[in-house]
Figure 1 (cartoon, rainbow, N blue to C red):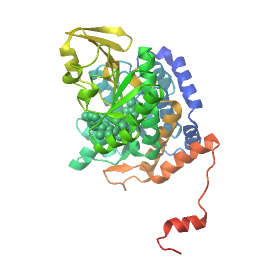
Figure 2: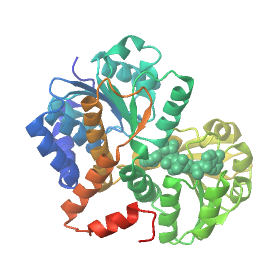
Figure 3: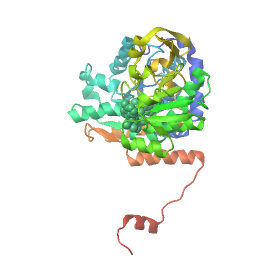
Figure 4: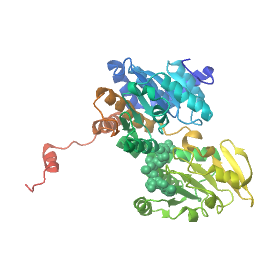
Length: 416
Ligand SMILES: NC(=O)c1ccc[n+]([C@@H]2O[C@H](COP(=O)([O-])OP(=O)(O)OC[C@H]3O[C@@H](n4cnc5c(N)ncnc54)[C@H](O)[C@@H]3O)[C@@H](O)[C@H]2O)c1
């Protein structure tokens, strides 16, 4: 079967969504024009596991325009949009996904993508690559390389690299400047609040927001919470990041203290059990819990369930837990990425940058096939600069160029 999707009849709605984002993704539009002429992926098979909504669909179509046969599954059951899947399948992409799929179906979909014997992979969180290194090792000889989208996936790849088990080169797209500076910070910053606000329909101004983790994502989430008028508390485990949060004007304290004060909690650490029983025990009645980190492990749902005398859906994407002392805590989007599971993810203009890095990094892998080590590789400086320059060009923004004298000055150590 070329696709496993829920509702093929939704294709027209999905195609409209893809058309909308396409209008706001000028970098990918330019790459698509170039790929269509040169067809760098002619005859090549690409397997993708990404949040399956409109921006991702457009990336798949850009690769297809470059000649690739593309198979795709969603990286999170709640982020998959069935209409987009239908639209993409109609465009000739092999789509294996539906919204709210079970863990078993998710595994089937990953395997279906791998059944197409991809030569290049794009992963988000590392599940596709993990499967290739465990149950589907027979496919490893076909793989030229891949690219990883997010911080958590890169942590897993680095662990494999350190163990010597990584079998092919993986470009750490997340670590590219045109990814984390914009996607993690401004993308997560905006879309996390979009997800929380559209789900709860509550004010943020005047509330206390606790942000766990002050990395690239946490900086964005905290910055936008402040802009919305909240008092922001940051929790951290890294003394440098904690100092950064202090100098950016936020309060910093351990979670056990912050837990007593917060109206909203947002975890963005990439770590596990960041909010757990001891914290739920001291939270205010009505506190709202959301996660924007990659996996749904940052807020301990088992603890919450064990401490609750009852629970029920309070509203779409909100679960109410009534604790034994009568306090109510609210968990958004099952503790999964709130910006994607309860909203539409990052704005198209942001994903334009991230996915441009993906597309160009895949081309880099085939241009250097067989010559790259099986390691976690950086996005090349040329690709980062190209993507940044394409964006400025699309915006009509010009910048200065170094004069020859300035270049000499910057490259020399002598006082001339
Ligand atoms: N929601 C999205 O759309 C989106 C986008 C990009 C990345 N992510 C994910 O968000 C997570 C964070 O990404 P990032 O790029 O900000 O990572 P990062 O490495 O830049 O920052 C993570 C921060 O969390 C801190 N931290 C770790 N464990 C902690 C703990 N127990 N308590 C408090 N702080 C802790 C670290 O010290 C670090 O400063 C990852 O899982 C990443 O994959 C999500």
